[in-house]
Image (cartoon, rainbow, N blue to C red; front, side):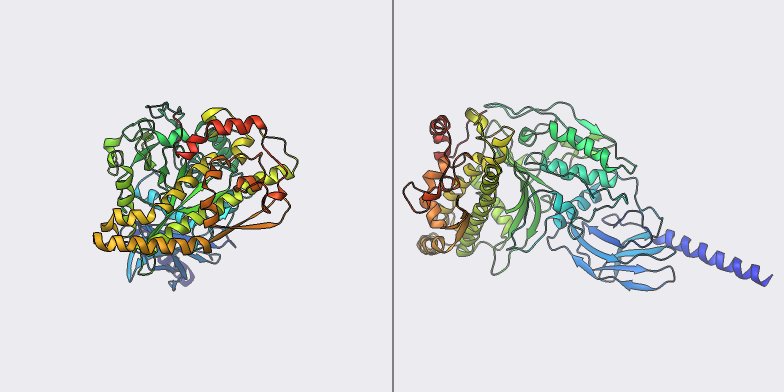
Length: 573
């Protein structure tokens, strides 16, 4: 009898304890917790991420089935809104644990976890899943401000447990052999669909044309994928979907008109509150980047906005916002600017008027106003002209170092016995498939030429926009002279290095490269030796190792379109 009473008391205590958990342990409206794996398993550590759209998070607290409270060691994101914090705990024991996300001593969200307890919810693309997506993107590509963040493809990023919070979150070892090699246009779609797969969310895309002179691209009806919704899908199903996806989308998908509703993306206002990680930047020429992180302005450094992009050779690299990378111009044949994926609600894509964040303001902005607005967002305390110049120079060097890797990829192709690569005709040099797309650099070099002009024009910009630098007109004229002197010093000091045809390194200063600007108007053909691609002059010591030239017909064709590069104006489609 006593034993029965004792067991009954224990049972009632357990039921009361679980009921107590269920009563007050709930996710917050603006703060939410996720774990990996989504269903905890014995002997498997658990990763925790909490995300908030209202305030920074400071603690992740865990309460054991026995009532013991533990503050877990955490790592907080430093990019601001949406705020996120991560932690990891060892394998769980028996029973249910309570995980709380806190700001100070206030609990903003709570989640019950335990071995065999499935935390996957009936997900939909609400604001908190958008915030989770943004936090996941930030962590995926995070790194020090001065760190070179680049990878041969997306695969090593997704397989890095320190970067990818969703690594094997389904408990199927689903990432072990996952192919992940998107190029420029595929890149934002791959990230979005991967996140949808892991979280049981719907995903959509469209088939679009590329537009033509005076007319932006337009798209067909949306293809809605619900294969992952409310089910755990194997990697094979995601792979099959991603093949269809990457065969369908191209650069035209991002360049649709800003007021068009039959699109995958919608434009947003130039505000810190809307430009979250995961936002896509589509330039007027077809290149796309994905925002990853904001870095606040300090007394010694301008504010930064980082993004990542993919190249035709599948390499991934982080870039900072500046005029040389984020190209913006008003044109009738494209709708450039910052855009977000169109929300899916009840398996339907929302129209512009149904989206609170929709804004057509970028359509009305001249390029100089667009850049001034962005620099004001990045530097609310105003720009120090010297710091701003050095940041611009650093961005150009970053662009050059990325080009070193791209050109080297072409050299590796020929070292493996690759044959002469056919050159497309006319404007197709910018948009094609095959080895030319993989190893040529016409689009990159067009952006590089624009970037050179931005750096060279910077001293004049200080005088032209004194308010941006908190200067009077008189002070701006003097500052222009000081920046010109600084420019002459630093371009001789900043250097990059490439590997010549004979395997030896060769160093070039930024001053050398600026002096070769004209040579970069015809340096994009991978059939030319690496020395020509870096502007070396015949007869010089640098050039002597060159053993490969593009066919004469290709050189003639390059001469015929050289004006596009000289004037940095891509031809209409």
